[in-house]
Length: 369
Image (cartoon, rainbow, N blue to C red; front, side, top):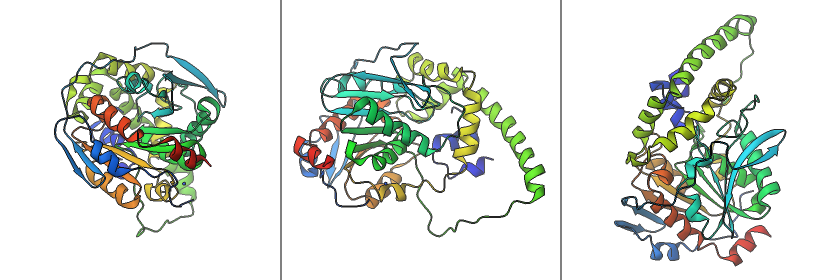
């Protein structure tokens, strides 16, 4: 089974199965980034190297950033298609919408929300099936979360925003931006999920035989439920969560009780196990139609990559390929793991705010007309 996930949209789940752990019209941009200005300003940090629109940033010690207070009952709730969706909102100014990765929640942006909210109105929402949002028993795929974010922009934010996403949240931000370009001024990806298409492979369909339909398919489902059920049970144990987090955080200083609690609490939901099963079998193993190539070909706004080069799941080669595919990209290389926003929040906040400062009001206006 592990081999069937090797090309998974979410490398964290590929690692999960092998080591049983936690779990669109293409045209010239009307909102060009002044990359030269971004490069000259740089980032106030030690060890910054600049080359074209690519930066490399070395980490600094944490300086005790303000942290979003943890609330067991969550912050705000919005009803979407009959489901309760959790979100956080702070600050005033041009909006930023933060989208978490697989298994995480709005609380994963704990060190980013307070700082960004000093100059922007910041939203962080929990995707359906994750965090404090409902563990709905629906068929999960990339379009579900795309539609959720698009409706969130329409109904809650109500003005052009910048979408920021980590891992699964990164891919969700991309597809949402293509679905509602008039309300998206830019996209920021932090070690995004998503696979590239393979043009050499042809999509093959086979007629299902009676043996496959009535015997082999049911047996396969039973086997999957047993195996995935065990993996889910093991992955929600606090010690396993800590172990996995430490393997993807170069500096594990921020792997603490707050972070672990924000992951284990949603996993205790009665529907969490079934949601996990549906994610794995209905979506994770059937993603060939959701490719970064296809999404990037329809993107029209500026793109920023804040990439942890030390990520054992999604390395720097992926960021470089995205940049090659989408010229309107600025790349900042960070000496961090899979979740740079939580591991080195100071540098991520500075890089993001610096890039945002180059999205002038005039450019943002042009993007929406």
